[in-house]
Length: 387
Image (tube, rainbow, N blue to C red):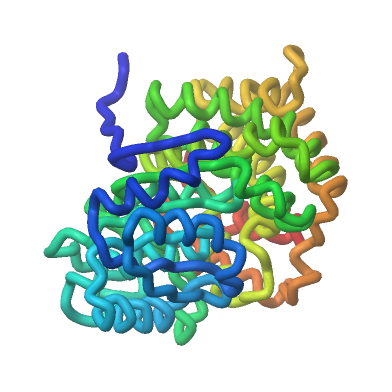
């Protein structure tokens, strides 16, 4: 019997090489004064900015130097109100996209961001619709262009948390694989492994549904074969296109089926150790979380139909029709090593940090969709293995 489910995503998705030229006309459908949110180097967005100028838009540029913080969102709201923007366009990786999404939501809703943040804030629902938001990703990893949340670092609490609402779904997601051609190998690896994780976790989620299953099956196989190629040759447009699509599919899946223990840990680790790239954290944790989740299911729920999904992940990741989860764990560990992802200890994590991280991870919204509830001992083991 099919479980009840809901599917929600961006109002419009435009995908393909060259579609960045459509950003101006599409944004102009929603407003004339645009706040454009970019990464630390706005010059990388120049071709898109030119297309927006050509469409007659008035532009004010707001930069985000790194992963967005609550303070960045507050500064962005001030900038958005100062230019009386009626549309927000974010161009870049997950950081500018999340910042832009948060700014678009907060500019029309009174009070500080903490009023609306999960875990560390009041978690109040948004009262008013956000300013129309258009997302233009230039990396293949987060899938933020089609999700309903924005991840912000709450620096005082040393944790990453989400501003989340169905109202925050973008009006348009414009995904042009050509915009990812300039990504260096390290960024390609970090982002790509995040994308792969965001396809595997929703497939194993306790909230998985037939539509997200179809998206994940395609995306897992696509990312597993394309990521090593994109890492080895950044000019491989076919591999870049596969990764851009895999990232998009992962965003669609996670927004509607949730994630799991890997992302449950990623927020607390990213908040406490800001130098640890999100994708690297996910990459190191993914094989260990798969191994421990499967072992826990076999021990406590040996008849669970979820167990078959772990072996299906193995077949999709390896391309071997006879593969089992143990093969997938070995394959993923080898992939992470070949993509030169450093262990978590390289970013400052130590054994003494693990108990506090386990406690914080338990509170993360992503942990609620994990295939089953893991014990503190099991969570500790997964994290220790990723060090």
